[in-house]
Each structure stands twice: as C-alpha cells, then as structure tokens.
Length: 534
Image (tube, rainbow, N blue to C red; front, side, top):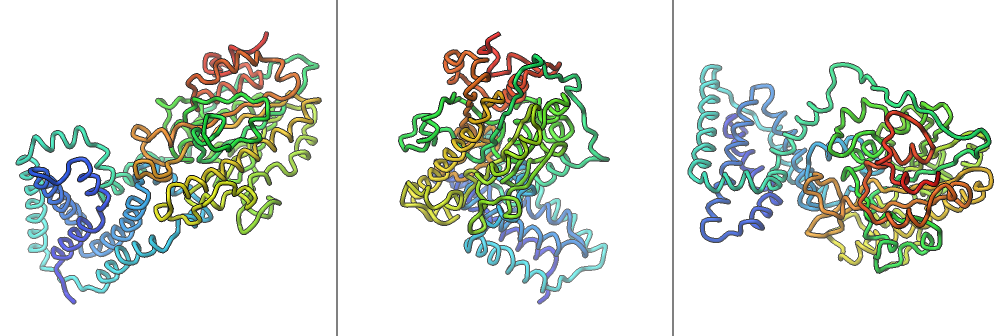
C-alpha cells in the first residue's frame, strides 16, 4: 500500500488527536461543559491540537525520519495515554526522571492487561501499519514545496483559530495551565526535551563540597550516638491513627514514647525528587536536580567529621544518589535480605545483621539509614505479610480503578499497619543499646499518595498543583531510653510537634542530633534546637 508522506502525517495526527487525548478532553469538558459557545471553543482546541501535530511532524519529516518518528511517538504516547487515563498522572520532567530511576521489579507492579491493550491497539498496530506502508515521495523540489506549504497552512490555521477566539484563549492559557499537562503527545515531548536540557552535562559532575569544617562537639566520656533514620515510602500522614485517622493503623507506635510531627510536608511528590531533596542543604524553593546531584548532602557532611560511621540499607529502588559516597547495601533480594516471600523482600529484613555492624564500630558514632519499600503502589496488597491483612475487603490488583475506594484504602492501610510494626521493631532493636549509646530513631516518608480523591491515583503530580494527600507526610521521633532523652525538654518538644515543618528541616536536625558544629548548620532550621537542655 502506497501513501504520500503528507497523508500519513495527516492521518497519524488525526489518530493522536482523537484517540490519545481522552484525559485532556475529559478535563476540558469538566472545566467548560459542552453548552452554547463552549462546544465551539472545545472544537477549536481540537483543531489547534491537530494543526500543531501536523506542523511538528512535517517540520521533522524526511525520507529517512518520518516512519521512525511516527512509530516512536505512537508507542510512547500509547503508554502515556494509559497512565493519564487510568491514574490521571502528569508526564512531566520529574515523572520522566522517576520512571528512568525505577527498577524492573517496581515497574512490573504497573503491568496490566489494560496497559497491554493500550500498547497493542494504540501503539503497535498503527506502528506496524506505518512500517509496512510504502511512502511515495515527489522529486526533491516538489517535496520541499509541499512541506513548506503544509507548514505555512497549519501555522495559519493555528493563528486564525486563536485570533478568532482571542478572549477565550487568553483566559485558557492564563487560567487553565494544568489542562495543558495532559495534551498527548505535546506535553511529554516537551518534558523529554526539558529533562534532557536539565540533566545533560558537558562533562563529569564536579561535586561541590560543603561542611568540610564539620566536627562532632562532645565530651571525651560522652556516650556514642546510635541513630537509625527510616526513610518511608509513599506514606501519607492522614492514614496514621496517630494523626487522628479512624482506623487503628498505629497500635504499636502509640505504646511508645514518641514525638509525632503531625504537620510535616515533603519537598517533592516522587521518590526521585524527594529523597535527594530531603537530604540536601537546599530548601524546596532553591532545590533543583542539577544542584542536588552536584552538591554534598547531609550524609556527606556527617562523614566529613570522620567520627560518624554511616550505613545505608535499601529495600527500595536506590538511594537516588544520596549514598554514593558511604557504605551502601542492597536489601531488595534474598541474597542479602533474609525475610522474603513470593518475590517480595520485607522491610524488617533490613534490621537483620545490624548488631554486627554496630559491634564492628564499637565506641564510634553511627548513623544507619533504612530506605523502606513501605506503601509503594499501585500493588499495595503486596507490601505486607498476610498476617497484617486486618482491614478487608482488599484490592488485590494494580488496576485501582477496578476496585472500590474501600478496597483500595484497606490495602493501603494494611501496608501502613506493617510500617507501624516495622518502626516498632526498629525502636525495640535500639532499646538495649540505650545502656551503651545515645539512641534515637527518626522516621520521615518521602511523599504521600492519592487514593482516588478527585479521580487521582498514585503520586508524582507537579508540586504546585499536587493535592495535600501527596505532600502531607508522617514523621516520628523516638529519643531512646537514656541520655539522649535527657538532653531534651520532652514536654517542650511535644508542644511544638504540631507546628509546620518540612523536609527542609532534616539536614539541620540531623546535624543537631549528632552535635555537629559546622558553618552549614542553621539552628533555626533544627526542629530540636529550642528543646535542647544545655
């Protein structure tokens, strides 16, 4: 079958406009409705989108690139359409970064027959037809003239439509920016370009060293510190019964002498952003990926003291670059994690063997960081052992939209219940060491999760438009049974525990806990500073 290059571009653009933009047009209808002039406005947007796709594909078309470009865009757009239609995700720069840093095990949780259907019917079948087609090309000059004519005509259509409804488009572009994030494939193409420009480097990353003057300030006979920092995964604050949730999701933690920070917020909505951001010296307004990966983080600053031993154990995808310069152990496989079942390694397995590490570093300060699998979705039912399935019925599929809200919530809450058990186990692991060390456990989740509120699932929304469910996170502090607890006015600490704090405070709070003196330390950002007893 023969087809001209122009007809192929026109047909593919129409296919993308009509069948790959369900979320975009659904959101348009939700904002404007389809009555009176709104119907004409929405039709005009469809024409502008169609003309824009024709313009872009024509601009980059050639005898050697047209097929490859169209096939690539159809396949990628089919995947994007699935995630936008199913989970209402936005495919922006940070989502692309998060995807590229996700391992195969985590990706498998997202696989479904529905995803396969999207890829086959929207991606592979049209791509196969394009591959089999023979494109008839005119002589060079005629082909070039046709290309220029198409570019001019498509650009004129865009300009004329926008000018014809200038008042509407002025309002649309100014007041409805989030709608543009679901335009497929325009927005993901823009995001890929932005990701490359933000990530690409002309040479090797040169690390900016900070806190080189860091020193532990403590008396000679002072007990050494043993602190475990637990980095949670996808836990939202309003699902902790400690924060007033009606289901009892924290039956063990409520029995411990903890300080619960009920008003903590994350600095991102995905692991790829939040984890490096929370350990960085930058606050949320000043942080970006390039600065994060090229500047020492709190782990590096603590290591600079040469008095603090640091171990990072990971039951998640990775440390996202935070632990590149300290001892790192992967606990996602049975090779290291002794508590695994049905291919799922449990967070509690990260505790096994820590006694040996502590013994090896006797009479030295120690920071151990445990990075949880936690509530990683959408397969929440996999995140906990069967005995923690307290809340039923449970959603036992990654197709959350096929389950009731109650089933999704129950699966998620059971995983929170398991985190409660894990954190309690960490505390009880530390208790015997309170006789020989100053012990503490600090827990913070990386970000929250949407569970169907306003049609949203999972996480990763652009921060400025992210719902509270994705940014309001749980945070807990346990200050040992001995000297560490005596260093602080607990009542004063509890009185400020409901104040607004964020990941921005972590860097300086860890420096304060280890009594590190450094030029990078800001006491006003240390959550515990005002409660410290001199």
